[in-house]
Image (tube, rainbow, N blue to C red; front, side, top):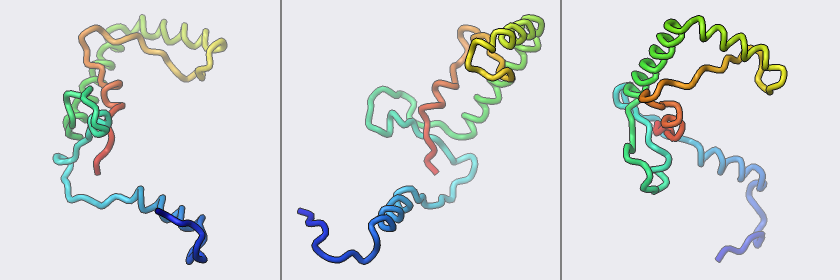
Length: 127
């Protein structure tokens, strides 16, 4: 049982809550090298059985991102005329949308390419 306000507080409640918040978010530094750092799936961390790959090394994720960027650049280079036309069309129609004029909507990726954006959004840092 907890009986609140039975004694005068040593510190103000607002200061106590701020310190508790800081203590909750403080992390201990690790001695991991870049090759050893990794991310853990937040779904798996919550105890769900929905995730099959529970962790991924930062180096591997970095390589996946680089490969996907290269594929996107190759796609834009290969289909430059269509890409420029799509960009121009999206700029003309942006007055009716909530997107700023500087945003270019890319076409959907080809089937079979890894969808790393949605996968990486469920990962959280463990450092």
